[in-house]
Image 1: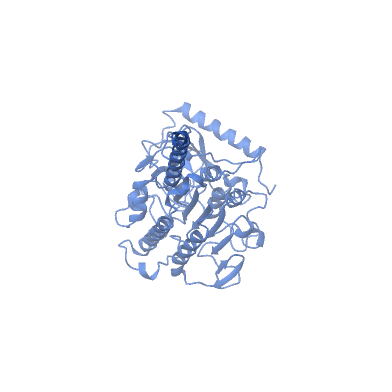
Image 2 (image 1 turned 60 degrees about the vertical axis):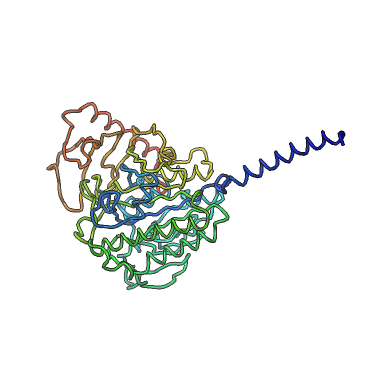
Length: 450
């Protein structure tokens, strides 16, 4: 009996070790051993002031408000352009639209589209082992099959290939595509948000055992406004409020799906917009809140948009990030999170903002951000300072009677009311030098069409 004691002692130690290992392993969630899933919700023409957590007094957005309260809210977040096509180009390539060869808006008969030499966000995700799905507005070319989503990194696609108010020339129909094929013509647009949401949920469930990238570029609140049957007339803000509240519902359904399938703690959800509101459409358009102007302009209201990040258990609840960031940064950040290895010489203008998404300290506040209008650079921001060298507005307003340049301190004057060029000539000089550097960079790195 005594001779067996050392063996029993060793066995007990080994058993204890195994039990401890199993306990630790079972205490770890699947998210500790997997690449993070990413869900990106991208509105069309949603303004900075159009949701509750960014100050709208009557449009009810409880899911977005809760997402911001439990996640990270970006108050200085920018789209890459104030126009539909160019903003999507910037998002999906991480590059300023000046590189694209079509830095404004494509139409159904446009002969250009996203170039095959581009490495899209979806293509990078696929190379990193992700399933990829796009459900909504594409708007990066339609006249050739090579321009469509399935040829640019997405495994699945359901949506309109351009804006919901665009009709192909000499043709009365808007096409709803499923993959490369027309699913139906002239779809009931009041069903679009629901159908995109249902397809996204199906995609998430189907791919829950592997990492996935789910991109939802909603058709609205771009006009014409078509809220779903359940949402018609529910908002005191009219049809515009109805469609925004339905988008909020969509987000809520996505979040519930992630939680129900054990994916919430391994999924980053990011919500933003392609550009500012279409203010010349009056009550059919949205609000840029305290910001000047809207869609189509390089004033703050044209390009500063809502930005909210949520990653259960990883984002700092209630964190407000004031450091400037943009959709160009999402490209770099998402691919780095996915483990994608950028090739040497890969051209991208965005930087990794994972530290901001997870509510950590930022050290990139002074990097320049460039505002491009139609084919031209209009302004630059660096830290709190913004310098306009050209201005435009769909309203036709010339707010400063032709005066250029214009310098604003966006920390104290986000509405761009008080020109400080005479008070800070050294800041003007510094920002002009940043613009010159950008011109030189673009000359050395022309777009793929040249």
